[in-house]
Length: 355
Image (cartoon, rainbow, N blue to C red):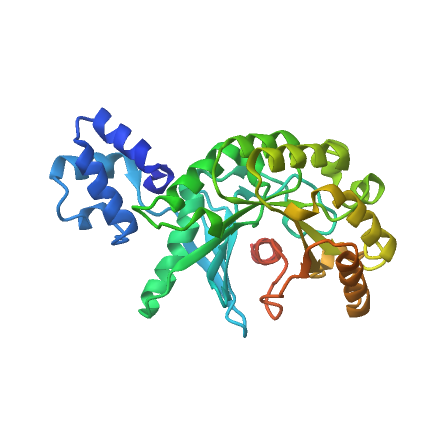
């Protein structure tokens, strides 16, 4: 199968075409057709010569995703289920906020991190997405927006869909360079957030990249005892090791980190955990923000329930009292398959039962 040309950064496209005997300006033309004019076939590139078009058609395709299912929420959130060339399914979510349109992208087919509360890990990882498949998600959502003809554009990206982004590091970085390119989609680095479950070495590598992309760490517990119970990854990267990597990141970049904290009833939502979390972040609170997340229950993980509104508020108030910047995430798409990976899991089950 031919790979998507979306997987090449502009520098890589220039290098590849020059290696095929084409001039640099041809690559600039192709890039403009892809991301400014957003054509769907190479033959629509009217000012690109025939030899170059032949090369592109012989070696690449533009889009490798097709829409399989689309769910629209009353609040404007849209969840897409895309089918890839090999038949695998991935989820992508468009969310509407007062500051713009944000897209949550997937980086892997399935997930091996093993968070016991998460729908993404119900189906184990079968492969990484290549950079073109990740960029393709943004382009499919933008295609949907373009068809509405109201001038809307994707302005923000969160890399928080199915999979662990830092477990697919090279393709992640190519994706970030493509979508951030000022001659392309020009989505500002500070409008992009990458989430990790705590791969300590990759957090440090990311700090060394010297880019302005935001980082979020899925912490979900303030100590090893609770975190290991709900996140198997903690056995490899315990809290102490994750926080050491965070310290390196903060020292290297001086950029704020968001800590994601899903509140699970009677598991990690007591005041004692709030106090312990505040203590953990005490020496870095000026560059920390805790995002408290109400849990979206998953049928297969029936042992977990959403924390009560009273418990959520008490946890929030305690963090504030201790001087920790925090907030409760605004919920999106609660009337559709809101939990990450839920739509994909249901669709795969449906397909198996109809075969």
